Image (cartoon, rainbow, N blue to C red; front, side, top):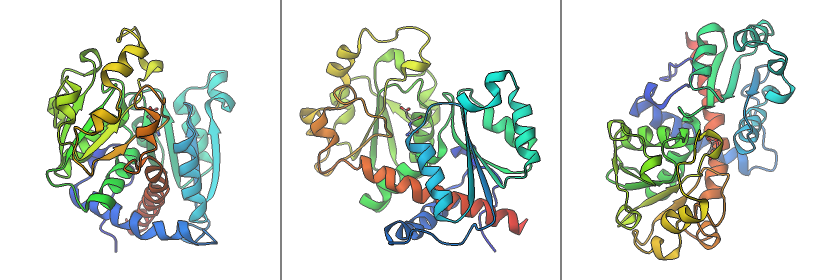
Length: 310
Ligand code: NCD
């Protein structure tokens, strides 16, 4: 009997604090498999996971594929450029055809907000949102939580500062929801044009002055300028952004002594942060990547065991 009763993972909002604790604990226990010489357990043997990626992705796609393979699931991947969507097929028709092949889980990244929700309402398989437009990236937020919990032990009253393009970032959206739900105090910072007006209603404070924002921060999460999602120019130049908001050594010293430096990737070195900050001993950027595989293993396993219990 599992205490995890979700059929899909679409948003951080759907998860309770208990659900999140359960996912983090499960991921923590699965992480050990990644250290073994033979990194494979039979848990999902005979299950099929389809990866449907309509947007470029390196880390997330690889991470999901590895997670499924580590659990012995059969995996298939479809990328936008090789799918029939480029031949004019609608998303729902693509979904129906995938459904007809009877997968157990569909992992989906799409440039439209809400696309995985639409698919989830139309097919039998479980759907995991691997990033939908500017909306959410729940598995990234879960791996960010796991990475912070490993180092800090918990979240209560931690000052988490998210710097960058908050407006167009699905990572920012999911991270704000996730960290504030777990008891951290979230501050967002960036050029005023890249801060959405309603961001405080999600549970974060806004501080436009970077030095003030970073004061005594326990965690700094830097985000990429989402150039591909900006309809018009919202910052004067990348050089100006790097000068005003880039995380450098001087700015890191404003934060607490044992601050954690994080970034979901891909990093633009010299823009969001200087190379010395990205590679510093308190940077956990690569640990985030490792934890990503463990989180996705946990979710695949929990979704399929919840399904068996229903
Ligand atoms: C992020 C994404 O795609 O939303 N990357 C990722 O999943 N690791 C962040 C980004 O593209 O900047």
